[in-house]
Length: 150
Image 1 (cartoon, helix red, strand yellow):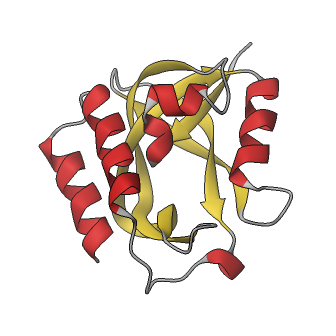
Image 2 (image 1 turned 60 degrees about the vertical axis):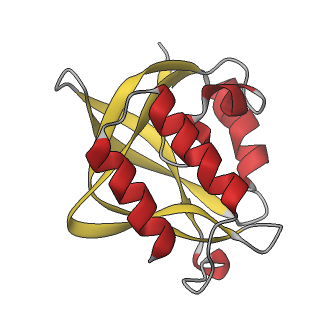
């Protein structure tokens, strides 16, 4: 039985994600309730990458991918799980058809969170490209842009 992965950052861009975990297959838009999108994870280039934080009343839009455990292990390597950059988090997302799906997502570890950082233009463009690719609506696009400027 496949697992599900919830992408909310540049991994929404299917081509970019498949370069990291080729077996990932997009299953559609989804929303994660009770989590807020932020661009505050310090990347290797010193700029901000996407992250999420628990927050009552918040909503994060993203994309659900079907995947295998091998796909998730490949993504763990890319996301720096063993080096303490991100950790896997089990969440429940609401798919576009209203179904609740248990999924894995990634949350930055506190040592790599810096709210003073801003995303690089190329990175923000990759996030927005993925959002457009999957038809995330104006509300989602506005949330991404607000989070990038916060």
